[in-house]
View 1 (cartoon, rainbow, N blue to C red):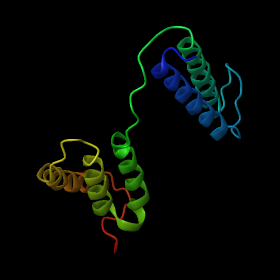
View 2: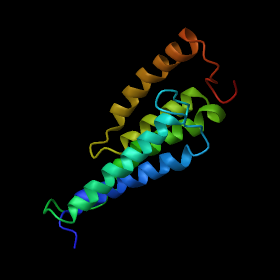
View 3: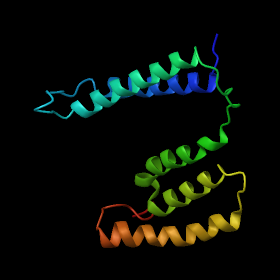
Amino acid sequence: MIKAPQDFWAGLLFVAAGLFVLIAGRDYPVGTASRMAIGYFPNVLGWALCVIGGLIAIRALMVHGASAPRFALRPLLPLVAVAAFGCLLQPAGLVVATIALIVVSNFGSDRFRPLDALGLTLVLVPFNWIVFVWALGLPLPVFPWT
C-alpha cells in the first residue's frame, strides 16, 4: 500500500528521467573518473536520478505523507510553448516563433490577459532580434520569407 502517493509518483518521475538520460546517452563513451569522456556526466546523472527516485518511491511505501494532487495539463503549457518555439524557429522565423512562445505559455496561467501577452510580445520580439540576430550575428531567419 502506498502511504505517500505524492512522494511515490515523484520518485517514479525521477526514475523515468534517469532512465531517459541513460538510454539517450548509451552510445557515448564514458571513460573513467580520472579521464572522463563525453558520456560520463550523463551516465552519472542518469544513475543518480534512478537511485534517488527509487529511494523516494520506496520511502513512500513506508512513511505517511501527502496525497497526490489531481493531474492538470495547464501547467505543462509553458513546456509545450518552448517545444513549439524550437519547432517553429527555422520554418517560421524568430518573430512567429517568439509570438507562439508567448501566447501558448500565457495560456498556462490561470490569469491569462491578452494585453499582457501583447505587451510582452512588443518587448521580446525586438529584444530577441537585437540580441540574437544583430548583436550576436546568429544566422536565424527573422520572418518565414527570410
